Each structure stands twice: as structure tokens, then as C-alpha cells.
Image 1 (spheres, helix red, strand yellow):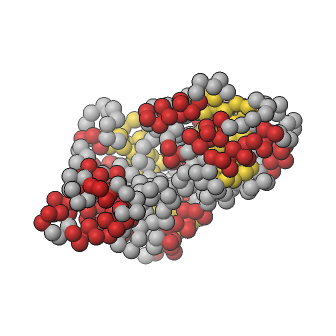
Image 2: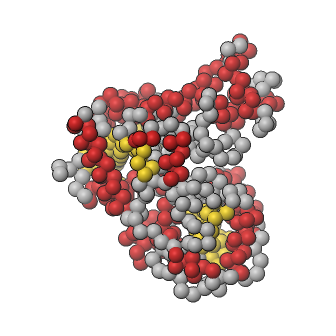
Image 3: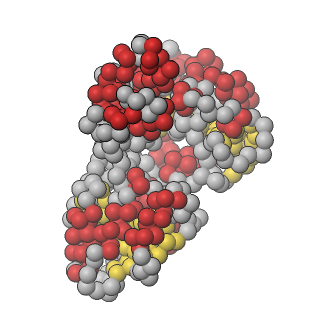
Length: 458
């Protein structure tokens, strides 16, 4: 087989961004390179981030060439730019023309927006995707409704998407004395969103017309462009089912679980043999409200009996108000320690210093890599009982699950572990994850080859 030129677009990338999708893209590209192919990365600098100037630049990271567009060159003026950026078309087209890829593998469209797919369509290049979150379905990528509840996707007229838009941009609507008192009430907002597309035809609401229809039109605009993909990889049942339910071309969806870098944690893949005297709980990830760190801290604060500790690894500068709330919840207790982020090659060591990893997310996590690494290091895990995590963590077998947003139930589980540390021994024995990133890369390469064969024959 001749080496393939493979372009992997991702919304953001190392070294400044280092979470799940970025790590997946990096490790997949490195595996493809070890297999003899020529992968390169296409990423972006988001609004407000520092840049060297110009609309694009190139750098090297992890043995890979990275092309980067700078979104600061075209300031964000309206919502539609978040899903349609025709001004980026010539920039993206020029980069793709320079790289001459045989196939393109998109791991996240945010920043590039689906205009990337328009470029790919017009250049007639085969393209596949790994759906790493709900970006295609949901403007906030998280499937969280305006009131914080889980969402299943846009309704028939996408007016629930309009509700989310209004709640997030209420300053546009509160100038209206009619709308202002209604849009802040959860029980009124859905009715307002249902009626506004009709009301927008009236002169008194005409100034809102563009915003209303931009919020509503996103659903079909994005869904239509996803048909350009020859194949979409879904790493979990959760993601697969969500895209099927929202009519994103079910025949093109192909489930493949993520792989992880087993070499990175092989020295730490040990079953717990002695029950710990003092339980060390841990959290690793973003420190934001949708990740539910406050739930964990509330549950931990209520623990009684033998002393336990809680280590929270993550950036403290993502949300100042939320961080202030967490500082208040910790109340200076030495048992709660905020620790910085760390190089990813230290993940095995960090997990070895945790007896139980807790992932208390309020949103639909899509097989977070830290969960898979925890299982690979035989570390028991407590997770929110939602698909995407519960399909890997079986309650009472290799960890525990608890109801979303229920700090009380989470606290009962943590208390049970504190009271009976020997519980962890069997959980640790059962915990495991064996699929390596190279296994996943081989699955992906098979998809590339099938797509390229179909393209040649079609």
C-alpha cells in the first residue's frame, strides 16, 4: 500500500489545548505516521487567544506538521458565524491544496465550521469523521437544554434551540418590555420560542428576525452538510444513538470504541491488593459547572468517619465565578487539594496516587479518555449514570454509578467506600480496558481504505 496523505482537522490542538479530542487526534495521527502514512493537522486559534499574527501559520508538534488558522482575523459579530464562515473558505482551500490529502478525517468542526465540508465537497476529496461530541446536533455541543436538563436534540422546528439561544443572549431580547419578564422564566421560555418565529414578521419584533432564524436554521444547515461524510465513526452507543435519533445518516455511522496509549500506563496496571487506610478520591479534567466538580465537593464535605482526601486536577482559570464557589465549598479544608494540570505522560502515575476516580458530569460524556485510562490502571471509578460512561462502568462491578446532579447519592457511595475500603479490592480486580490506540488506528485505516475503494469504483 502506498503511503496516504491524511489531513486531520480538529477545532483546537496542542500545546495550548490538551483535552480529550485533541489527545485523540494527536495519538491517532502519531499511530498513522508509525504505520508509514503522512498525517498533518489542521486546527485554529479561537477568538481572544494569542496568536503570532496573520490569518494562518504552521508549526510542529509531536512529530507532526500543524496548519493553524487564526479566527481573530475575522471578529465574531453574530451567532451564524459559529456554524457558517464563508470567509474561511479560501484560507481552508489554500491549506488543503498545499497538503494534497488523499483523504480527510475530521475530529471536530468547531472553529472551522461546516464550511470546511463545503471546501472538501468542492475539491472532491473523500472525507470521514470521528464524532467526538454532539456538535452536529447541538449548538453548545453538550445536549444540555436552556434549564440545565439533558436534551435529546432539536425538536421539529428547532424552537428548543432557539430557547437556548435566547437564554444565552437574553440581552438581545430583554429590551422588549413584552419579552423581558417571560424569557427568564423556565416555564414560559418554550412558549416564547414557539411563537417568536411568527412574531418576528411583525414590525415591533423585526429587529430580532435575523437572530431568531439564525438560531433555528443551524440544525438543517449543519445536518445537510454532514451528508458529505462518507463515514462517521461513533465511539460509544450514546453518540451513535444520538446521531441516529437526529437523522444524521444512520447508514454512514460506524461504531468503533476509542483506543488508549497502553504503553503510557503499563507500569501502573496493577490490581489493588490491600485496602487503603485513608481513601484518596480524585478528579481529573476541566473545572467547569457542566463537569459537576461542585457535586463532588459537596458529597465529599459530608463524609464522616475515617479521614479521606480529595485531589482535583485541572485548570483553575476557566471560570472565575465557578472557581470562587469551589473555594467556598472547600472552606480551607486541607483534605481538599487543587492541583495543576500535568503532562499527559504522567497520567498513569497520577492515577496510581488515586484510589477512586470520580467523574460527576452533568452532561453526556462521550467515553472520556481519563475514564478509559483509569480502568486500564485498575482504578475503580464513580460516574454519572448516563450512557457514554455507564456503558463502561458497571455499577458494583468495576465502579459505581449515581443519578445525575445527585450529590446526596454520590455522597452515599463515597461514604460506603470510606466505611468499607475492602470494597475497592474486587472493583479494582474487575476494572480493565485493553483496546490500544494502535488497534483503533488500524480500525480507522480499514475505513479509509474502504472509502477510497468506493470512491475509485464510484
